[in-house]
Length: 79
Image 1 (cartoon, one colour):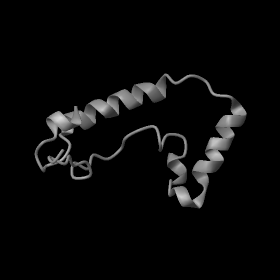
Image 2 (cartoon, rainbow, N blue to C red):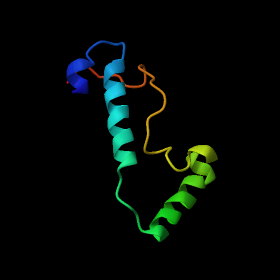
Image 3 (cartoon, rainbow, N blue to C red):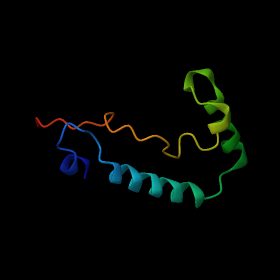
Image 4 (cartoon, rainbow, N blue to C red):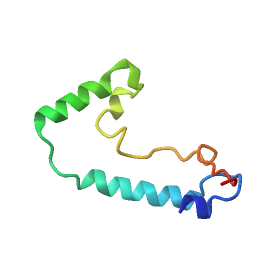
């Protein structure tokens, strides 16, 4: 989908980001319950200094999309 719609050098169109953001929010909201021990291990890993995740985003930082930077995703037209 990205290869098809992202042929320009402008990057990822905003509506694609919005759709991915909505899907991630639904997946996060309705996720299955996790084993508590596994959940705590993930939290400890996410709080480590090499992850660069702010403490206020430790519960949702890797599950949700926050900023749309259209220039971050570019598709090479040479295949």
